[in-house]
Image 1: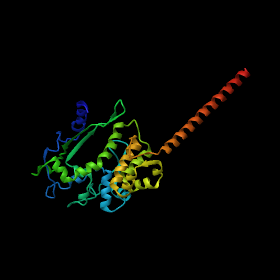
Image 2 (image 1 turned 30 degrees about the horizontal axis):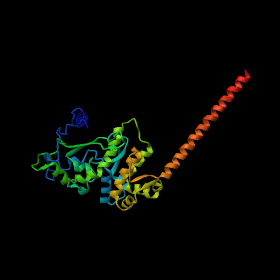
Image 3 (image 1 turned 90 degrees about the vertical axis):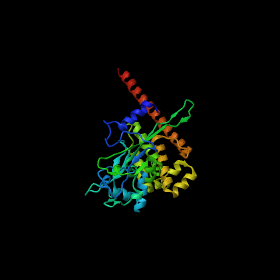
Image 4 (image 1 turned 180 degrees about the horizontal axis):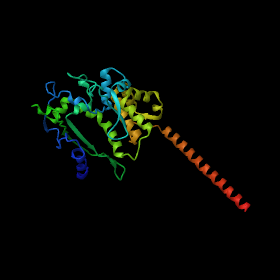
Length: 318
């Protein structure tokens, strides 16, 4: 990634005309030190849990449904609202705030009732991460060159938040470890890159309604996605590594990772060695396309011959 490209992206994060003033314009590393502590003794305790948009990642939904012991479709109905992700046409969900006080339904005056399983967005606060991933490209010889990564951290400082006035000092790495962020990064990375890949395409290429439904299903309701894999014609259409099949039968986390791979392949054409369309399905599709093409050619010939006959008849009449 060139310096000019990175500078432009940093400006989109730190530029005063485009970003909230609560984002501190300083790039941090894992070794940078910050002062912050949130606890029931601070006067603003739980103030950050209301009047905000908490977008849920697929892993957030998986963990919260397990915590609450309810199916994903019930969770989505009771606790979420639909939204679009990162100014794209990719559908997602966000936490539905309580009507009476506009706060998260899981927060009480004593704190968060699902704290150990709280969403990723809640864990990151107040240390944000910028993860710029440059798209890969092919060499002249056809080889694939992976895209470069640039990652740094920054602090979000709300005026009302008194946690920044506490004496507790951490490195960014220590804070992230304490909040359990690294696991969330691992679980959310490929999903976020799907969203960023879609965002990079711009608005000129719209997703079909079928593609949107597939993305939403695979992102929000793993049990539904699992039925799609094992109860539809999916396994008759795709060659899937048997080891992968066994893993996704029993492990929801493996199923989640597989959903990201499937979406990358089906929505963006990413080649995946773990599964591919069966050769006979490809040949059948080619055969159908050839037949349709042949019929189209024959139809064109018939139309031409009919037009020619009409012209000849007109000439005779003259």
